[in-house]
Image (cartoon, rainbow, N blue to C red; front, side, top):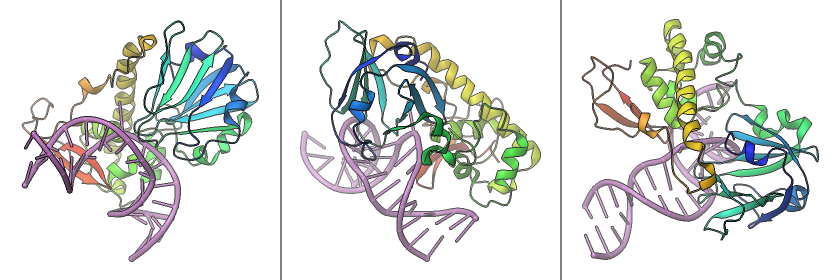
Length: 267
DNA sequence: ACGAGAACCTGTTTGC
DNA sequence: TGCAAACAGGTTCTCG
């Protein structure tokens, strides 16, 4: 969202090429026409959704799913559609914004700007982890009595919005909490650590990503930028990085998702 | 209400 | 080497 904002805000969309009828769901009626000729007034994010507010009083809602990418192709450079390029927006400077998504778990919708908060996809989201509504008290109350593993509870977007598999694994490691702990069994100090480390994990990731995204004009498809900072994710069999811990990173599957953790220092 | 698993898709990696 | 299974940054739906 931060990479797209300077390229889109204040610009007019002069062409919308919608190259297939759907992603995860069908696109809204006449999406291409409704996007053409409107100005992008601003961009914002709610959980993992990107919202572009338009001069037509509608907002373009975007979710990248698992494999989705939004890439910018500079004006003057020739653009030839790549495989899985599904939507191509061209602005009044000739800059193209391309939604590419091989697995098509992503989504796009057009919604009334003043009803964005009540959209079905957004209505049930929990608090933003970097906002004031996310706190020891709010998380504790949402987890109270829950017997589901804390790993699953943190992936549940109604408890806290915007955490994915990587950041949940990393935050639990930083907090020294086992992913198999029942969500409702975590004591107050554990909740306090969890809230703090969720925030720190996200801010570290955003900081690392921000520097890499400065090269967005190249749109060369370069992959993740926080991956070099993972303590446990994808590191099964590697030594635990916590100082003084001699454990080995393990992997287990919870609710169909891989959890990476150190059973020596996470309890 | 809660929690686990399947489903949606394609591409890449792993294992026999 | 070749093929099949497993796995992948997510979310919703169904079922017990």
